[in-house]
Length: 274
Image (cartoon, rainbow, N blue to C red):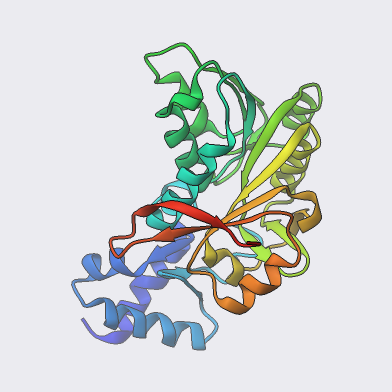
C-alpha cells in the first residue's frame, strides 16, 4: 500500500472515530508503527490532523472529542496508575461524585474493586460508571445518575444534569479533563460538559482532578476549573520537567504516579511539593 493510500485511510478513520492510535493503525494497515508515525507527521504538517501522544486527533478537536470507545483505548497504562492512586482519596461510607471520561471510568473500576467502596454513594453523570455499579453483585454501593443530554464521551450534561446536582452534596468529586492549560486551568471541548463539571465542583467539599501528562499538550475550548479551585491534581511521571515545575506553583497538591516499562502503575506516588 502506497503512502497516499495509507494517509487517505488514516483520514477516513479520523472522520468516523475522532481519534486514532498508532498501534491500532499499524495492525489495521499491516505496516510498522514507524511508517504510520511518518504518515501522521506528514498529515500534521499539512494541517489535516493534530498529533497527540500515541496517535492523532482531528483538527476540530477544539470543538469535539473522540467517542468514549476510542478514548478508552488510549494511554491505558498512564490512566491506570493515576486511577489507582485516586482510590486513596475515598473512605468507606463517603459520598463521592465521579465525572465523565475514561480516566474517571478506570478510577471507578479500581474503587469498586477496593475495600474503600464499602457503603459509599456515587453521584455520576457518566453512563459507563453507572453501568459498572449496576453490574455489581454487591448492593453495598448506591449510585445516583444525573440525567441530561448524552455527549460523545457518554456523559450526561446540560440544565437537567445541573439541576439534579445542585440539590445534592458530596465529600469529594473526581473529574478527568481534556486538556491542562498553564496558568489557566482545566478545560473541556464541550461547554455543556464544562458547566456540569463546575456544578459538581460546587457541591463538593474537595475536588480531585485526574489527568495524564498528555493533556498538557492538548487544547480545548471551555474552562471548567482554575488551579486554585482544585485540591489535588494526580498525574504521571511522563510530564516534562518544565510543565511539572510550572504546575507545582499553581496547584494546592500535585501527586505524581510512576510507570514501569510495561505501562502498569507501580505502587506508590509522591507529592510533587515535597
